[in-house]
Length: 460
Image 1: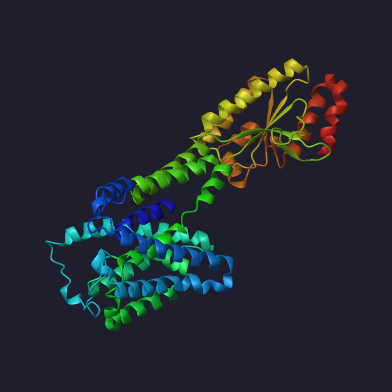
Image 2: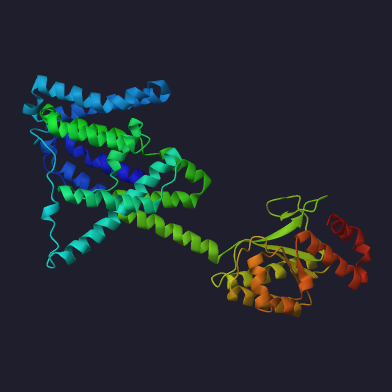
């Protein structure tokens, strides 16, 4: 949204500088080239008038934020700006000194055009192609703008209802010679800064526009274009939230990268490119999370039945003879090979650590599957391979807290029969207790370390 606001602000330089010819492109390079290639046409009178009213609009919004009971000052500022600017131009004849004005406006509203609709087969394919392209673009931009403002006011946007609304208003507009209608960014920003909260504001605005077109158009003859540009710029500046970008940098660098890619894409190309870049990076991030899930080593919190990540909790202690691993994602074909390699590496690292510290040799591997919401056939094959690897090493494999969907698939695949249902546990604590019992019943040599091992058995 900040990128779109920047683009709209740059496009208002045409009105503020009093330029008659301007680029139709929206990227910053084209806009600045158009501005600085016409320096001989800049009108200082128009620029001064625009800066004065822009300052007035920003000051009024500042005071309204400082004192909420004065909200009407900011809400009335655009209208008072138009009135004051029109009076200034009328009294000083500023239109004769380079300040562009609206000029003569035709009275009345658009006539009905329903009788002129043409469904001739010669034009229909072109109309359908154009309608699909413009409809998709208008819908994408409109929903993007709507969701951006929804975040400010904490309400929900329903994409289906937005699509229906865009379709209905364009069908109605086609009956009265209207342009393609969407969710315009600049007008939405003006409404937002004026304090509008519901769609009733659009009804009021439509009625006001109709009354103006029917009766009040002569009053706008002297309204300078520069004041309209100032109103739009003031609204856009309130939407460039640089503090949020700084917050993203401190919280999550990748989110900051997505934010800046969207901004740069919009500013240096167009809104579509910015959206594609942001969505593309977000999809890449999701794929990375799925393909490279975390595997964590868990340890026991002293004097409790709780097992937590040993890297996050410094007081978490590993259980002698047992390696507890947590898989922090669903297991799919995209990450099954990675998880198999990671589990094998964790086992190798644990055995190397035990040899260097002369602790109780590794006997059991427990996989905490609390975060595994689902598993596919590739994941089941991975577990089967891990089971075979563990068996070859003379170790035991246990699963702790697998979900209902996971258990259903493990049962249908006959993996539970292969592994043995006695090695499926409700909690990590139960798995540790069972492993400790197995260690002491099958390995009497461990009695010298029984005090240390029994501590974990008593915790469960």
